[in-house]
Length: 315
Image (cartoon, rainbow, N blue to C red; front, side, top):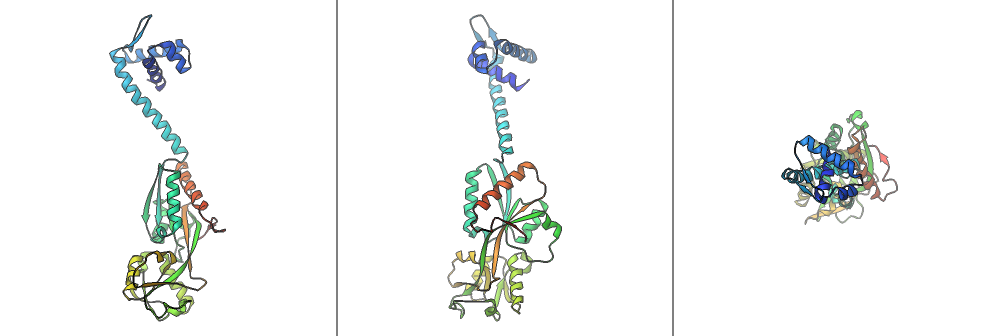
């Protein structure tokens, strides 16, 4: 049984007239009659009772009509789905992000625009540190990742060779101070001013890029941070600052977390800044998935205003 035979059968069943059905199908009546006859022979039942004046469905014809509608509809849905897949209109993307990413306007605007443009593409989000995102991208567990530059010298070059990075924005680093701290009233604060302060920081095992960056920046100024407390979440770090445990350094977008007892001040050091990158696989991917990723990247780059932002860069 062919799909074409079912479509011909439905036309006759709806019209109950071979000539009108043939005109509707834009074919001649003889080939239509022949196709119906073939279908009846294949099924071994009469589908129509024909006289010179009328065409009526048999009981078998009425039962087939219901099933034929379902089969034709399913075939049309399958064809439509295949077309949407080839056009990148349906599917899913696994996207990683660091804890600071949702605090940027760019992220929220981009996700909203993508949902509007591709409502049938499912976005699956996973909050992961930069190091964990790079590992997941290498394994193919993530398609895209919003992350910060990685400052480790131990990264496998073979892993990075499979990943491309697009610069989205640059964020200054800020210091979070307890309210009333002697430095809170200063208009300019440099890293060297924090030399004697107690730091609350992410643990080294958290895999965050900011941990390594703080150590690198402090080392360039001739000291190591005095870590008095560790916490795995940025909100916890800020809460510890509010409690007077110490100070912490974070990307400036975290100043959206307004907590009583905390004062935010930007660092004036030229190198005290970080970038938000969009990482993606650049190895060979199935056409459908590659198209979904390409569409997301194109939309992301269209939302970046900095002149150099849409250029590919290295971690």
